[in-house]
Length: 458
Image (tube, rainbow, N blue to C red):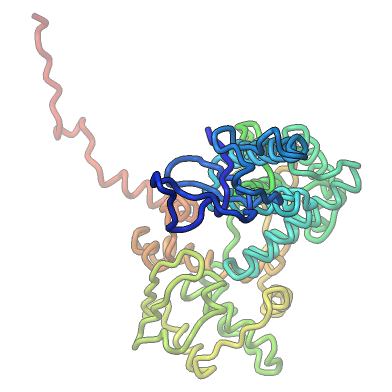
């Protein structure tokens, strides 16, 4: 618990003492200061608006002596000021328990000077304004693709606020909001790829997409809470979950190119359209190396050392080493074709042109995937090229290395930089014939390999 005491700035004449050895009071008026004391190492000195003659000051009671004219008015003002400072200090400690004393001091001093507290002024910022600040702050830390996801969430929140007449504030991001927002997402009118579903199934955002929205929102709420914009903890409740998987939720089918399809694409002649040829080549580079798009678009010539591509991953900060030999050897040919300067364009244009590339190369295998919107099952059935995007390159590499070339899963992880083997495990195909062969190589206990020994009970 902090205490507050008043002191005079210059109560005594420096280095002068009376005949009894006592300090001599200064004959001039001096400023009254309030010292807010948390402990011996944390003391905040605050200047007041009052100045007094030291001879008029009661050092024991820390107030102007009562016989002095206007003492009542000054003392009441000092008492009110001290109480307001203590209240503000205690409120800051309660509202922001992790705030350091130096930061509290800045806010208390500003309050004493202007009557406002910076951190509380920030808390008055509209929810969406703080969200914009969040995006701007993270723009230099995250990939363009991730920032786009934050922008998409912002559009959804603004549309929800308008359609459902639900004013967004930090305190209102609670379980009521959670239920209403999930309901809104599950009944959302079709836009973009939602229109690729059969007409009767177009309405509503997929559960997987809803989970990403909630996860990103929780990350924002945590970020803004740590910076003092709010103290609401509703989003931390277990019911406010990003993922509530249904028992019969179909597992996300990973769409990748088969080896024959990648070969067909790589060998297709796009010489009459350099725009599409460049898109095809960059995509194939991703397919051969298995790297994240954020690292592909940041490729630098100096990262090539002989047959190795060695770099620091943009997302994880870990070192990645890709041997450009065997399956990955064509990646080095692509680099040489462009003098080690990959023709990178914006991801939005790239994904648009890539579908055109896939269609021209006749990558039109029918692909059917199932997802859920709430409990409703929805089905996507489109030619393969409609599912092609920059991220498919990495997925294709993982799938082919594991299933076509049977590279050990831990070796694939060394190349791709995945942190969790369970992520790669999802790419493994169920090879029933291989499973049968493996079981056939085991021994049958009836062939005399094992003998069951019966013992008499004691």
